[in-house]
Length: 460
Image 1 (cartoon, rainbow, N blue to C red):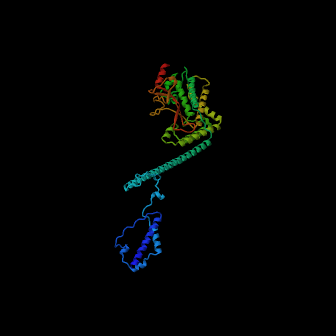
Image 2: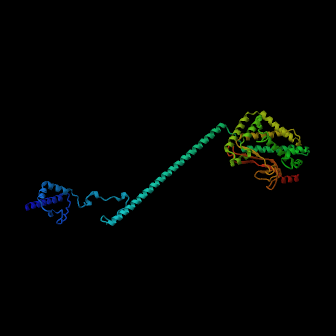
Image 3: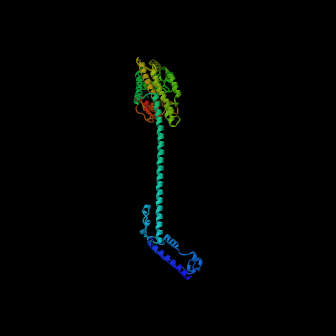
């Protein structure tokens, strides 16, 4: 028995020596010493009772030795490898992660390592927040460009609509044919010439020493609407021409230059009455002089006004080319005869040319009316009147609308108008058919104030 036990211990001792030698030759890894085993422990072979079965079941054979050697070779290393000798433990490039250098050395304590970890965590949070801010900035920039793109799309739509509208207007313009444009100065000059001719006719044929014999009834019928002092004007050799001039101009407005009452449209010949009825029916404004104010308060639509005056101008251009000169002359003759009948009793200078001069004045008025009708712009004569009484006298002098007759001296705003010799001459809109809400003054009204008339009486 002792021999068997001694043999067993020898085999283990041999196995142990062989294993130590092999371990020393395997990667030069140091061998750790075995910890002491307490007696009586279950893992201590000496503390276990000897049995023949153990001797038979655990013999140390060559294969057992080889397995023991393999177990020792596969056993994990208990001592870490030297980092300087192992490339897998190369230092980490912290700058690639956006981290600052570590504080301390590789032998730092656990506290320093925790401080470093906290520092790294804060740096990573800051980098994360920076990345979020950059992302938000990029999203805001993308949204900004989206809004700009949408605005550009809207602008393009508006431009396209404006282009289509302009194209339609151009097509309508071409369909309407050429536009008749007349210079404002030409119309002002023609109107001034008519006024001068009327004044000249009255002073040439109605003034003189010869006494005028006319019934009171006729005088009242002809002149009472112009001034309450009509008899004073007729009795004065100096003042009479102003009253005759006023009557002559207002008769031209009523019979030639009218847009509402009276014949008018003499240049249209025998078609004048039919055209006047059609114009009166289609005119958007009841009184054409009120067109701007009606457009401003939206009572009238600009499109309606533009359409009507475009039609009026085109019709006048077409019709004036078709009307015969004979029919126009016949209508002019009718007006001249009417004026001659009314003023014949007041003609003291019986020259044979007085009727021819009246014919010349009427022809100028017809020419002025034809030019006005061919233009898309509105040209209108505005008669002045007292808003309370409705009479064409009895209101204060207004420097913006009026001027004193040249032979009566200057008038002031505290003077009362007694006689309106000629009305205001206005232009509304443009020759292109635009701006009907704007009015311009071509000529002021010519008036005689009561104070100026009294002063002229004293001077005769």
